[in-house]
Length: 411
Image (cartoon, rainbow, N blue to C red; front, side, top):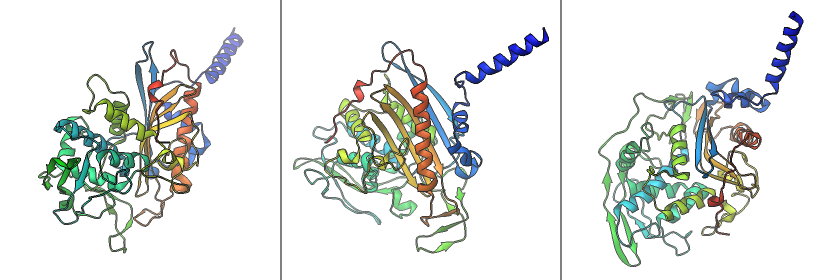
């Protein structure tokens, strides 16, 4: 009798090992632990500051999506520099503001002139990358999503204004996010509070003008944010002291993915006041590759397929045609971030994946010595492939109809 019980126990243990991975709160962690590529990073999570959020999508008989989210080391109160990922909310809010203004002749394609009226500001009266040579919200959004253009972000930031951005994010429930400065321009706190006068034209007719705006509010975090051991200052000198992120932008990973999910699957009460043309524009340029783009033309070797598609592909030259990634990446100060909705039009696979990793071995900021190529990109590629392979093998009761994501691109 005792021998029979032992046989049963051994059999049950064997069957447990053969069973699919249990889908619980440890799903991501278990997948990472099974892959040797992640062992060094898992051994020192504090150093690499890794956070991952994966959302599984199951469709019902009416093709309605149902979401199940899984988290690894995610914490909305833990600071990381979001870099260019903040361009997504700015693009969405710019479209929303145009809709809310409700002015005849004012839309995403209106000519959009930026003037200057304060220190640190510069004007824009032409855009040589546009087909008509003129700047517009639509052209800026194209450049934001296809190649993560910093100036395009700055011009939409100036149209919105710091206080408007912050209030809108709070109204939509993004309570931890702070977007309080332009990118790649070393401006003071006060200069970032001031945003340029702007003018919009329908042909030769002025349809909207906005004067110089100053944000009257301040958005510092509760505590000072210091990181690292040293940094290079604006005079290119090494300072043996931590780098101060206190007045830098912030957007936690959970808020990034929640925003992307709402845009990809707008509910009956969507977060953003966008119309069909707005969604069409965002979907196209979120997923369009540089080589598929005209006005401007982005050429190899600088602009390869994965230029703004870190998850699944890292720095790969090509992306297979069945795969489309609707995303926004970020890269700065050793932080590498990707916030993505990934689909495979051949296998009818879809999922959300958002991740951040920090690679700064010498703990010095602004020195350019970050391990993006050796650690960051390979991590993002392997992470995306791991979740994609998991999606390939998991069972679904209903096959997703992804027809609405089969888009026409510039080329």
